[in-house]
Image (cartoon, rainbow, N blue to C red):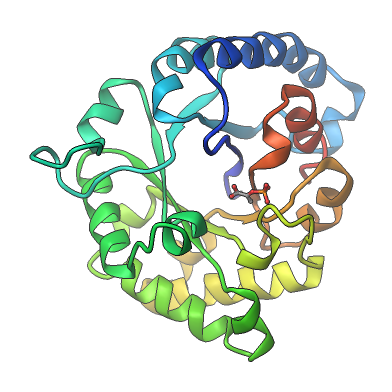
Length: 262
Ligand code: PEP
């Protein structure tokens, strides 16, 4: 069975004090959910929960996350391990803070900060070489979907991002399909649209690697996920979890999404 994963991407939200409050609430809610009657027919208890705070809250979050059984992710990193890169943060620095994952290729990095496929590829290689697992985001913009380019965009992002990544390294990667038109917009993909894209991604990974590697790859959906819309998406066979922005800022709304995992 593929790993189920639920990721909170806080983006540029939460001070250290707000991080403490979030984990305090999460710690009180998690045991209730784990012991709920619905657990037997969902994947609540075997879902890996990951929280990605901003850099400034990573150290605070690191200890608190461990106490809740939650994994820590960074939202970005530089592709060099050290050097004269003012304002940047390296993979070894993230490892030292207890990060197990790093989110790379997020659409806000691609389209607000103009990160290229080549830069994302360099970051993926460095992260893997430094022992970080990668949550690799791919997804098309609205104009690309409307002009029937969804699959060619995904194909290009995957080919360039994963170039030179070997089969063993691929097992340290989780892919997040995040249609850009659905991120922070309240417009969620139809379950069939998500499934079609996830199936395409899995088929592409099969072509690049092999069937077993593709079958084991967790593929998350991201884009305006909430408890109210996630059950239907989560029921699709190629959806293995979610990358959640807005609805991950409150422990309660984040945990309500966990209850919809199927
Ligand atoms: C995201 O941050 O990757 C995201 C999907 O955000 P939201 O859930 O707010 O659309």
